Length: 265
Image (cartoon, rainbow, N blue to C red; front, side, top):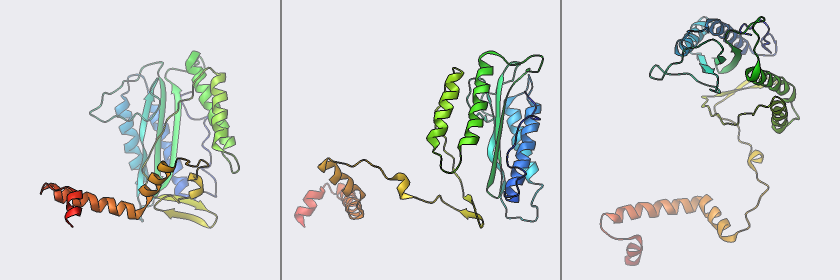
């Protein structure tokens, strides 16, 4: 379906969420609806992305006007990925544009933030699909598989569970529809993070480092390799290497080597 009337937006009305988070969710949903409605055969993907980003800035500009220093706006640019393009296609004006056509499988996602509280939303649909003209074939398979994977994740992501349980469920669902999960890595830079603590929101500028999360059960047995790793990690060794490197650079102008210099000393 193209319209969002049957979609669930979880947590928007929850009293436990900070007002800034609720506002971000409310406006992200409003922008998503507008972009979905504007997506039609003949529409430019570039223009739709620009429309979404402009609307995000316009909508967030209407809230918390008294707090002049508060940052708000685009948390993730409006992205419209069509057919075999998996996700995050947000073209620049210098990039090649794409014009939507009937039958395209369209994925729209975007993000809004209010003072660091981020609300991401997304929707997938097929242009021209309706009750009288339902989606069928492989497009229907992949949409159904993705929907069930999202439902499984909503039930499995909870305290006490492991992320591998989610992956296992996704693999089973995808294979049931003869689809293949897409593996990948996405890295984003955050200026700060907001943690929802029992006593209220806590803002931090960098993620807490937990050594146990990065501790390995494997041990290095090779003596030479162990010595090399220890020397690389040693601050004294690093200082010696830096000092030697600078001395070599100085001696390079006179034609002397570090060994000759040391011998002369």
